[in-house]
Picture (cartoon, rainbow, N blue to C red):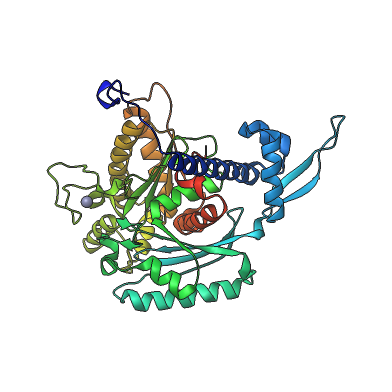
Length: 428
Ligand SMILES: [Zn+2]
């Protein structure tokens, strides 16, 4: 504390007893929820695991672990699974997750597609459906359609409805989490200020969580254990736009308003084109699938490239990726150019945040992901400031196309199981 912010000497700062007692109570709840979350996370990622190991890994006392585990057994979230080798005393019972005990619905509302997922506690996809995106249809009509789709998914999956704890909704940003609305998102223009969270909660009767797709994808990676051992990483999410979710010191970083990691609107050319976001020379104007597809269409018109074009950006971008993978020089050039711009923005992010790992997630990486991994890795190893101190690993998401929808399902599972671990307490 600096001298300027210290209380003037001679004065005594007192906290009213009632306020102190209530903040102590809040702190106690916070700690209990945090410990519970860490125990669930460890059982999910390392189970079957014994109570002794849980105590060793978390640093909590045996008594605290016993209390937490007893509650999780009562709630059926965890089950005992056979005995370990006796070391002379009482044999150890192992604990593992009961994946089917709780289920989350995840919805990714993208420009080209809406993806629905039901995921269990192990992050496994129990049911999945992908339908066309909203297009120009009014949000109210789309919400009615989504409600029917979600009902059909639950019905068709045969899951026990009572196990569904809620629904996570992921959309491109920017968004306002307090009101549950999308705000001026270029790819969902018709949805500006529409109360999507409230509308879907009302029509489905499910508790709804809401976040941007890149943050959801970063949480999904963590939930599946794909980032284990890394406390500082980012997921770069490329769907219709380019975003990123950032985890710092094991905690998802949400900024002031959850509009964090807008790497697609980082300037890569200070004298570049004006962007609809208000900035100049943004990454998305040079590297997004839409830009690559526009250039590919021009090359097709000139007779330099032969690929089927459908007019759906994600499908056409995939076609460019397939042609690039087959060695077509024009397609390779288009993908490489996009990847080089993304690499420059990723280097800025890594230089600012000193990250260990960058995970590439989203549908755009499904066909051309290996180009991006190679080009971004190579650029980081040559140009990142801390390259002589530590490497930065670049890898593809384990969730592929479903990263945001699965992340959305894990948002609600995590929130209902251990509300504090995700957003405000370290989960490393
Ligand atoms: Zn922009």
